[in-house]
Image: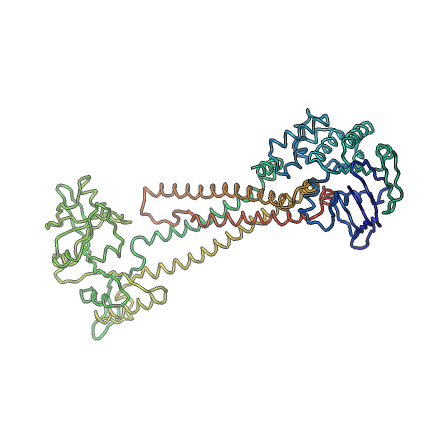
Length: 225
Length: 414
C-alpha cells in the first residue's frame, strides 16, 4: 500500500536549513493500523504530511497504492488526496460557517456529486459517528470530541484507501480520547489502513505497529501483535 | 447551480464584508454616473441657449458712420438695399441669406386683433432662425410666394392662440393693417420674448411697406468656418464688402454691426471641451478609487480565507475549482452591486432631468444653464464593466497565491 524509499526532506529558511527527514525507508501494508511516535521536531508530522501529499519531499521515492507520488501538479495532488486519502487533524480543521452535515459532505462536492445525494450520504456517516442529531449544528456549537468525529466522518466519506491522523486526540480529554480511538479501531477493523501520529503512549498502544522516529530517522519499529 | 449555492453560503457567512465590498462598487458607479450626468447637463443647458437660430448664422445691422469716407460726411445713417443681399449671396461661405424687414402691425381676425412684429423674410429665414412647423402646421414662405409677391402670411403659435383661439388658422384670411393675407403656416417654435411674429414674403413687404426699398438687417448661414480665426476673417471680409457696396470705411466700427453666432458657439464649445476633460479626469479618478476599494476588500477577503482554502485543498479540492469560485464570487458582488449603483445613478439623473423639465414647462424658453443631465448608456456600461473586471482581477491575484501555497501552510494561517 505504502512504500517509502530513502525519503529526504529539508526545510530552508533565509538564514538556515533544517534537514528534517534523513532517509526514511518504510513499508505499510494494506489494512495495517500504525502509529508514528517521536518527540517534537523529530519529523513525524512532516512524514505524515508527505504521506498525505500535503507536502513534497526532496529525494527518494514514495509509492502510494502503486502510484509514484512525485512532482505532482496541484491538480493531480488534489485528485489523489480526494481519491486515496482521508485526513484527520489535531485542530479538526472544520469550516466554521458550515454545519456538521455540510462539512462532512464537502469532499463529495469536489467529486461533483449532487447536493441532495451528498447530503444523504453525509447523514449516513454522521449517523455512524453517533452525531445524527447534530447534523445541522455549527462546529462552534459542538464539543471537541464531537468536532473530531465530524472530521473523521468527513475524512472517510470519500472512501479513502488510507486514513491519516495528525495528533487526533491532542486537543481532547482522556475520556473523549478513548471514544475517538474506538472509532479508529472500528474503521481499521473494517479494513481501512490507518496511520496515527501521536506522542501519547496510550494512543500508540492501541495500534498494531509503532514506528519510533528520532532526528529524522526511524529508530525502531515495534510490532505489537 | 451547485457552485453558486456554495458561493452564496460563504457570502452569507461574511454578510457585512460582502455588503461593504458591494457598496464601494455601487458608490463608485453612482458617483461616476452623477458626475458625468452633471457635466452633460451643464453642456446641454448651455447648448440649448443657441436654439433660437442655427449655430452657423451671422446677422448684421447697419449703423451710423463715425468717419468721413470718400468725401462723404460722418454721421450718415446707413440702410441695406437688395444690392447688399446680392453681395452676401456672392460670398463663397454663405449657404443661405435673408433680408429682414421689421415693422409693427395690427393684425385682425374677425373681432380679435393685436399689434405684432411683422417680418418680411426670404425663404432661408426658416432654417436660419430654426422655425418649426408641426405636421398640420402648414409651411413657410416658398419661392413661388416670393416671385409672385403673394399676400400670404406665417403666424407664430402665440398669435394664432390669441386671434383664432381653438379655430384652425390655416387657409383663413387675416387683415394686416388694411390688407388681407392668407395664413399658410403656423410656427410652433416659441420665441423667448415678445408677443409673437408674423412673416410675409420679403418681396411682398418691399412692395407694400418699403417704397424706398431700404431695410435694416441681413442674416445668413455660413459653412466651413470651423475656427474662431476663420470667423474673425469672415467678419472682416463682410465689413469690407459692405463698406465698398455702401460707401463707408471698412475700419469704421460704428458703420455696421456684425453678430457671428458661429464664433460664439465655437468659443462656448471650447470652454465645454475643457469642462468635459475636467469631468473625465474626475471620473477616471473616481473609477480608480473604486478599483482600489474593490481590490483592497477582495484582497482582505481572500487573505482571510487562506485557512479555509487550505482545508478545502486538503480534502481534495482542485485548485481550479477554488479559483473559479473566488472569481465567480467577485463577479457576483461587483455586478450585482454595480448594477444597483448604476440604477441609482441613472435613476437620480433621470429624476433631476424630469423635475427640471417639469419646472421648465412653465417657462419653456427661459435661459438655462442645466438641462437633461443624463448619461449615455455606453459610458454607464463601460464604467461598470471596468469595475467588474477590476474586481475580478483583484480577486484572482490573491486567490492564485492562496491556491498555490501548500495546504499545510495555508491551514496554519489564522
